[in-house]
Image (cartoon, rainbow, N blue to C red; front, side):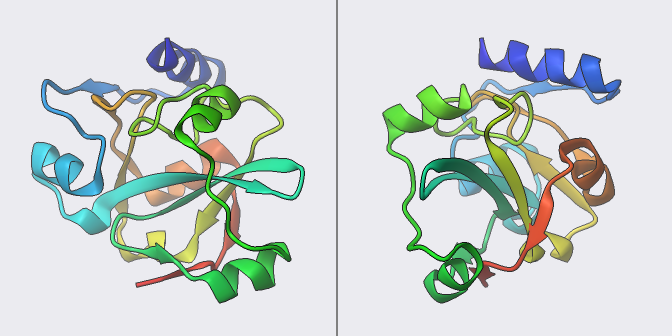
Length: 153
């Protein structure tokens, strides 16, 4: 169902990118990179957080990690990732398939500066077996995400 939400989002936004359905899992950065014959830096991982009373996602370079100090300076609270159940409930996507596409309108999208290490990226597409390849420029344009600097590495 989540891949269908991404497809509907792409149709609504007139995005002409093919969702690639993989036989192997792309649920982790290393699995995705291996399946796609890409570098881990090119994997655009999407992390879901609760920030005060809001749900947000941060899309970051696959090798980056959240920097707690930067996160707190930016969002004025400690980084608290959503649980598996909360992630599915609040984003509509399962862990391993969370992406910045087809999200409920109340989920705010942020793009971390770490993404700028690659011109082309591979975000998930709603399933641990679905990805899409696009330029970083397209990702920013499609998601209308706000740029932040909350990662290290």
